[in-house]
Length: 196
Image 1 (cartoon, rainbow, N blue to C red):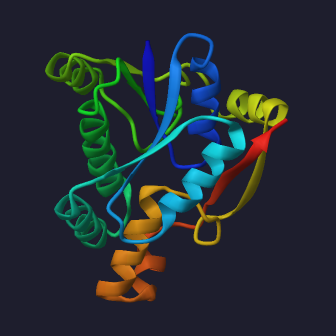
Image 2 (image 1 turned 45 degrees about the horizontal axis):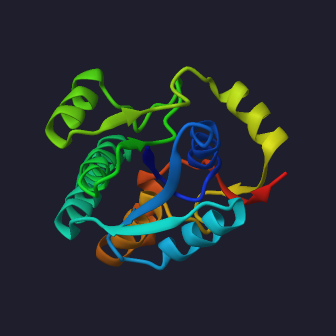
């Protein structure tokens, strides 16, 4: 069986791929609207951990609507959630047996409600997998420390293939860098450089 893991190049999606690897033929899939070259960074991370890579295009309207939602809300939660659900829909249509992501038990966003997961499975004839859903942040960090080499830093400085990179670029283009800073709280991100 094969599984597409939604992949940003960060530690959570890379760890999800490692967890699934004994059971599936894993491909790391970066969903992008092509706003930035962020998929290039996800491809490099996929190569560094030794998995095949695929890039898929998201609907530009969904990304732009999410960016405006974030500006209207003043925080990223709903916009990121909308994009992640759209990305799962797109990846579910690629023909893999299963679609997975790196969502953890204590993630605030994105989270996948049971009803959405079941609907995704029924509509696309796939299995939705969240291999880290029982893991808290500390457990994930311990496993990552043992199995992955990662770079950590401020979100706006880590080059990876996540939705936030593209949304930040769109908001900066439309509303300016100050609005980006107002909408996104300071937080750290990771980029995988290889396996340990």
